Length: 159
Image 1: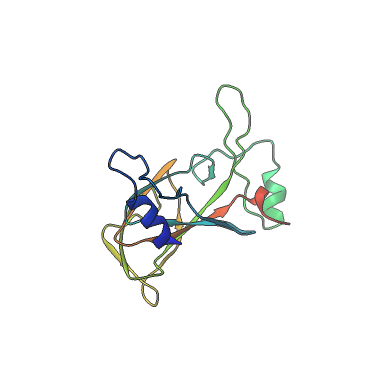
Image 2: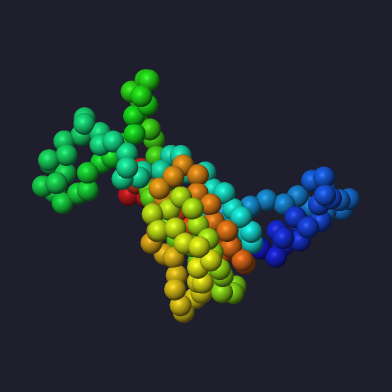
């Protein structure tokens, strides 16, 4: 699929218009009960993640945090709009992974808890399987296409 998408992108003219006879390209997303996964192409990739449940958000005071602690549950953290007081509905949890499948990769990241620069990753070697989103916009630069996976918010997971 990655090769097909690359060929479709390369079939576009420099002004962004499709050349005659080329098909429409798109992105492939794999959505499971726990996460959403997609391919990041070679080069710089920007991913917008504003609706992510991150630990740097305010704790929701309307939830009984003490009872959650007694049940060994993590505290619920929710953002509230400063003007309206409305609660943000999260789409993602903070957990992500970046996995090179076709070949070893060199990656550089920004906006994660553990950012790296020109970091070598490969199957059977070092893998980024447990990083955390720390910004509303994250960047991943990669030398080859890689899989990017992010955990879905608890409210979107199958019970």
